Image (cartoon, rainbow, N blue to C red; front, side):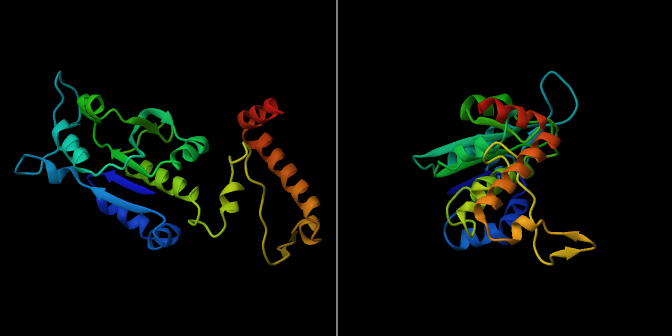
Length: 229
């Protein structure tokens, strides 16, 4: 999987992706994360990429020319998807993450300030994606969320692909609770069922815990799961 990120702050992307699981995935040629800075494509001698909005209003708007030229400079693979990180987009979830993992390349546009000149949307025609109903100062954090989530779906990124299969939302429910050593910590014991080696009972226990936790914390997910049964 190749990720190409158009960003005014490439170090934010590079620093995060050069750590832990993503770093190992890159070293093993499972993922490849590249950054492109629109400032390198501006025609302005001061490297300006934003200007005041036509019609007035607060803030600055990202200019079409640097972003479109930067985007067009990126090599596109045949099986490629372009997304724009924006609060106006479709909310990113586990289902979308699985869909994105089927591509060979994801190109991401990170916004800033008051947003993009509308002609960037009209020319590039990206899929618009949001990580929630709130506003951030830039698109780098949402881009990293997408990279991290999608990378987990690619075989070889995690030690065992089953780790991703058992994550919260993978089956429509929140994940069951986990325990490790010691068996007793401050009077709190690991549930006995996890210690007896009976895998069918362990699986049943974990499903029941997952179901009850979802019902308690995310009734919307619980009701959706029960409707499918």
